[in-house]
Length: 327
Image 1: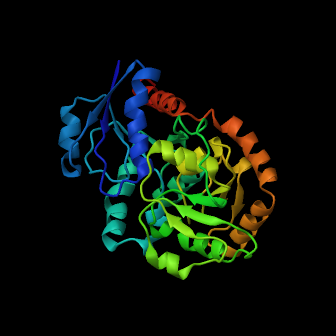
Image 2: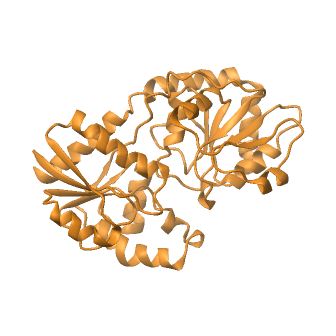
Image 3: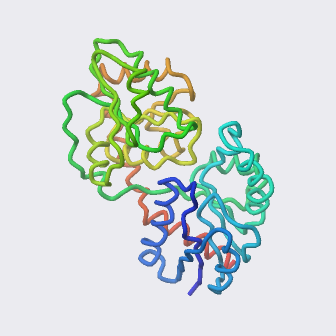
């Protein structure tokens, strides 16, 4: 039995995807890797070193972007993305200092660095100085209810975005592209998250509207994926992008910036340069005029992408644990 201690408490900046990552480890590891004893430690960040050491680990797993120094060795660390280094102007000076003084040395000291896509592996080499041979790519998974959900019934066709509204998500590009569509195309823009009246007043069309849905449960989100004309991921960068994978598994066409689509999804998605609202508008208009063609391509992708389950993710992570503890 390999005793792995997981720093399981979400940090204040942990995204929904990061929380899903940790939850999947705890839920799936006992089923797919009975030789792994995964022990969650729910300690505040400042107490990480002491709490992790007290759990007597053979290996420590750091699943979030923030961790304290002096973590017991050996440890593996997950890098979800490096947007803080790619777009420093979007973050505070304190964040930049943390990445330079704490995070970069922490990742360089890891026995293995885990990432979910080759793009992030390349960023770790270029921006953190991590040796490529110590990086392991483990794609993330999708919610089990996505594939079989009933499509959401809507009065007008709609395109969907699911996620937070932070600046690096590129939502201004999505708003501008949608507003620039020809008026003869009936199309709504639907987003998860809190209402933003300023956005709705600034971006308007006669033949569609913007709607913010708040936080959705998994079943409702699955139905929204299935009912959408397309799912759009306009981010400046994404480490992986679970919603894009889930939409693709649901058989929904995916449009995304080239910096936001993981390699497993790229063959089945339509892409545009991040920030290029005109290119996105052109893709949306073509899709709205011929949705059947896009659905055919999406259906092919759904069959392939259904292999990327959370069980597969957990089993692949367990293999990295074994590689470190039992070389």
